[in-house]
Amino acid sequence: MRKKFLESSVLFISIMKWLFLASCVGVVVGLSTTVFLKALESSIGFASGYKYYFLLLPAAFFLSTFIIKHLAPEAKGHGTEKVIEAVHKRSGKINPLVVPIKLVGTVITIAAGGSAGKEGPCAQIGAGLSSLLADILRFDDNDRKKLVICGISAGFSTVFGTPIAGAIFGVEVLFVGSLLYEVLLPSFVAGIVGFQVSSALGVTYFHEPLRFIPHFTSIYFLRVCFAGIFFGICSLVFIEVLHFFEWLAKKIKWSEAYRAILGGSVLAILALLFSTRYLGLGLDTIKSALEGGDVPASAFLLKMLFTSVTLSFGGSGGIVTPIFFVGAASGNAFANLFGLSPDVFAAIGMVSLLAGAANTPISASIMAVELFGPQVAPYAAVSCVISFLMTGHRSVYPSQVLSIKKSSSFTVEEGQEMKDIHDAGFHPRPKSIVGSIAEGLKKIRKDKE
Image (cartoon, rainbow, N blue to C red; front, side, top):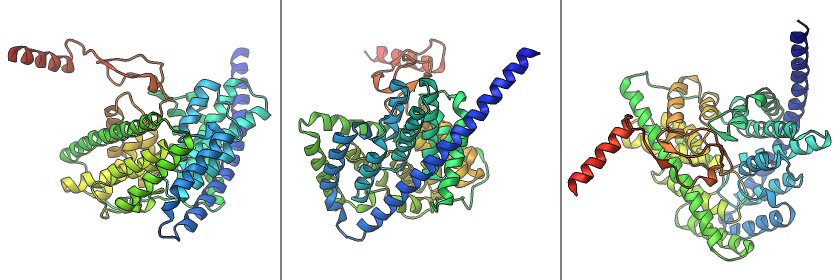
């Protein structure tokens, strides 16, 4: 009896401790996110008043690269990836200078027209402030990691207005195929408190409940499944395009400053050749796609190009908002191609691309409910999981750690980072469906020879 009482007492104290700490993180991240979002909104409004504002992209990329390189190199890239790396390799230790530098660098990039998102900086700012709090309280490595994960959840929740999905995202994004249950409670608390603080301070969020969802039929369900396959392929293409431009940037043996000027110049030329709709956050196009409006069929491919150039050549910002653009635009294109509801499939595509590209099917499925209503949930969840599986062992976050194989037909070592997986060997089981098909193909080849 005494042991049971002791166990309950310890757990009670632990719960109270993390309720308090997570609430503190939520308040701090809610305040910092509000400052960032207000600054970003004002700078975008000011810059968009000039027709050819994007011609400042070379200077913006140069300035962003310069301040990050010399003041806080950890702020380079698309935010969330650096936080994942810090959690896995440095027990969540983050340089406090990352917070202001990431804020300034991202505002400069997006205001000038760089194709990037706002969630990565919020996650990095939230994680950086949480790491600073952990240092002040002299936490050990384990508690610091927990607090930093709370910062990720709070940052994601406050930037999109999705507290439940944001909380799950923080504990799901670190590992492919597993959740950190020990951080679940504080992540929920941090996400909910952060969302309430930012909302109270005047931050408004986009929620678009779908007006009409077709009744369930086997044919419609199959269409959703095929859409999930399509979105998985789109996720894969996006990841490969992003990695190609990162590789290309490294191949150009110039200094980072000159590469930044080159990337900004290329992006400005692309905007002149195609459209300015692919610059910046692209929220107008996302909204249009979700309302069933006319969006160019090639919009999702061009957004991949603009985003890859931005993030590979000196721009600072997140990757999730471009993922939403690509998902909504590809869903709109898929629906128009097959005569389906463009708004419904734009919504499904938006969360499915997140599930596939970031390997976060659970948080993406929950986000569908928070943004679009519960009616779309069954379809969105199925599409998200299919997209997650179709992407294979790849990710926009190379520092994610693999916890599961997506198929037993592949020989890939679990426990390694996604960037270290260069080839998932194909070795199907003899009596499985995949194995039988593989054997059949081998026999056909032999007969032809």
